[in-house]
Length: 410
Image (cartoon, rainbow, N blue to C red; front, side, top):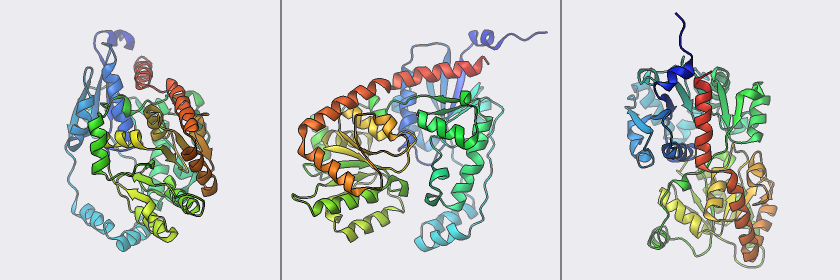
């Protein structure tokens, strides 16, 4: 007996898509991108597809306000750590033992398999919107975001490098489609892993700022007082990881201290990481510790206010797959000073002042220009708004809707 074509079967029921996002920390980077995607999919007026976000049950509250319509949440209890894993975690909380553990632990990696959740829920395909994935007999979409480890292996431990080199190409190979956010990244993934260019799809991403409620005047003043913000400051919202390149900002501030006029203030946000100690020590060494603030993790309402109050966004990263804070700055009407590394010139176009990421001199010059010229700030803000015409979460959701259907009827 002949089976009905897949498109006929799907006419009798909704296509069910699992969006797999069981990660350690959803409130940053890719997590806010997934939040935006879920919000966009929730707003689509369609009856053919439904979406299930799979997260650890401790992360449900983060996503719940942005999920409605054809989207739902499934919280999975996080497995308890074994005694061996708890012992390793304790070692990593002690700096010297963390270093020793990194150097001496065996370098190995494995490709995880599905625990059966998506299959038990009756899903037709699985979308991995982060680098975290697993093997499954269901068709998949995989998003590596970037292959930074191939370009800057020095920023990765041997274990982390091995995991990426084992898992990323395996998930790319098994996926029906590999999704990236820029043409630069598409070319890099095709070149590095030898993928068929037709298998790699570019889908531009909107930002979570489209989903957030706008802060009121009272919100803005409250955050200014709570965070003890200066009247004028540059903003860099990024965890202190080596590739984020906080050091070049500190060196630019040191240069500005030697020029006429007071050096500006820079506000850093992002969950504290081990490398932050190195950044803080460099600030002390360069004599600019009084010119920087480390706010740590900030809420969605706080970060919106920071974008509203800042003079400009700084984005000196060595390597990015997209650079979401740049699009968030454009959304907030904030001028941008960005490095010209990897995808960033593609994303910014002519709407930012660009500089080489290893040049504190050129960064200092750009900061001076921004401070000195309200006209330049207005011009860059207007150009940023123009760039945003190509980045909306509604269009992101529509493109994934089409990609999901394309996989389902193949």
